[in-house]
Length: 294
Image (cartoon, rainbow, N blue to C red):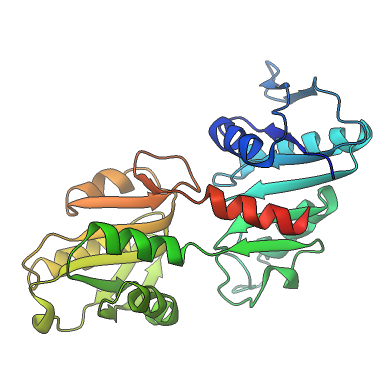
C-alpha cells in the first residue's frame, strides 16, 4: 500500500506535517480561502489520482470548518483518490445526542450522517459518548476512537508528586479510576448539577485525609470551565496545595482560559486542539489508529 497524501485544513498545518512524517506520505499543496462574499474556495494542487487521501482537521468550532472539509473530500474523490479518510483529534457535535425538547435537532446523528457521506473512515480521540456506547451507532463508516487516559496517567506520574485525582461527575468515575490506578493515586468525583451551559452547581466531598496531596482536576472537555472553576473555589478551603487542571480537549470558550488561570497553578491539555496549554502529545496514537483503518 502506497503512503497516503495528507491534506491539512486551515489551522491544522502542524497536525498535517506530523501525520505526513509519521505515515511517510507527502503533504499536499492545497489552497483554502474565502471569496469576498464569504464562500469557500478549495483547490488541491497535488495530484491524488490512484492515491489515498487523509484530511487533517480537528473539529472544534465545526460550523466554519465543515464546508471546506466536505468540499476537499468531494474534490479528492472527483480527482481520482482511492479513499478519503479524516483525522479529527477532536470530534464536534457530540453534545446533542437526544431530543430533550420537542422540535430539537439531534445534531450528533445529523452531523455523523453528513460526515459519513463524505468520507471512507474517521479517526478521533475520546469522543464525548454520553448516551452512546460507540461511534458506530451514528456513523456509517469505519471509525477508530483512541483514548488519552494512558497518556494522561503517564504525565501525572512523571510530573506530580502525591496527586489526588478529581473527576467532574459521577459519569467520569470509571474513567478517572482507571487513570488513578495507572498512576497509583487516590481519586474522588464531584457531585454536579448543571442548570445551564454556564450555570453549574458543584458539591465537593470531604478531602481532609488528602490535604497534603496535589489536587488534579481531570475532564475530557474544558469548554466554559465553570465546573473546574467552581470546584477549585471549594478546594481552596480544604487543600493545602494549588490545584492542577488536566483536560483531553481544551476548547476554551471565550474567557474560560483566563478565568481558569486565576484559580489554578497549572493547566495541561492534549494537543487534540492547538493551544498554549498543550503538554500531552497524541500523534503517535493517531498514527497507530490510522494504520489499522486506512
